[in-house]
Image (cartoon, rainbow over all chains, first blue to last red):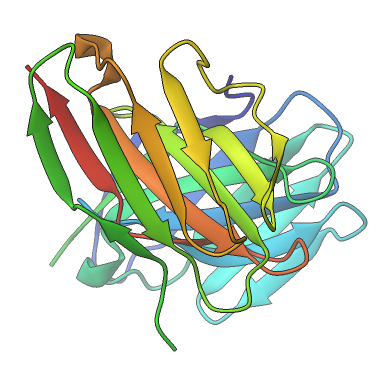
Length: 110
Length: 112
């Protein structure tokens, strides 16, 4: 069963704007990962943040983690049309185990 | 480096028929996963292999689903017989020593 919830379910923005997606989870984690899925394709790993980390950056991506609130956020800065995709958070609990949320559909209009 | 390979990409069958999906993970990845993804949902783990051993198959409906990874490399997931509710995308992923998972493009199954 899926344990995480992304918010919002869908997000529509203009190119150049920032996009923020949130993820809440219910159980303790070793790490929190974010994946992107383009329409009709497999998932692509974006970034991993460990439970003892609070913030991590990778290019235009910024991830935060608040274990006290069991929540994480993904910020995409200066969005591009190519960022249009579904974004999933996945809780890493134990060795190799990932539990995915339902995802946020992001639409970036030119 | 080749990614995770899955075949077929699409499969349409009638209910009660058998179907099989094949996955070849990234070379050297000892962990292989099969996920089920319904429309508008995130992937849900069906089974995880460490080399040739199925170490987590708690979510695999064993009455109709089976999987194997005989030589610890490629894997096959089978459904027999298929039901209408099995229509979904079946994703295969692999990883090395618990690191990030690399996903294949998936097999989209339609059961009529």
